[in-house]
Amino acid sequence: MNMLDLTTLSIVAHANLASLAVFARTSNGGTIVLVIVSVLVIAGIAIGAYYGNRYMNWYRRESPHSLFMELCKLHSLDPRQKGLLRQVEAAVNPPHPGLLFTEQRWLDGAVVKSTFRPVLEDLKLLRQQLFMHSEHQEKQMDEESEGD
Image: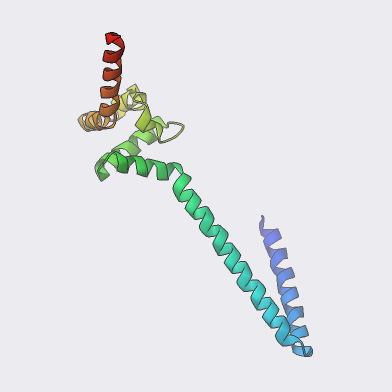
């Protein structure tokens, strides 16, 4: 909506309210009009609050940021590790932040190694913490398939 639309809308709304106020002052039904307008305003606020709350709850559950925070919590990452992972995300720009937790290649790339040279040891420890369990499972699966 542009500025002209907002101005026109406010003028029309003001004119309607002004005519409603004149009607309320000149007729005996002024109290009824005020009650109806009050009910409509309160209903509008309640409906807006309900749908706004629904949207915010959905966004908190479904947003990439929410998933990232849940995965950090699941992997018991401290604030420093979260910050490092956020920096890696900004450097490599994966399609979705959750990929940093599922695909090792995002933490192994040349961009990461050159950009994060001063904290490369911290990055290696973070990578190990994130993927140690999956590497262990892969080794077990390889051993089981060799045994067959």
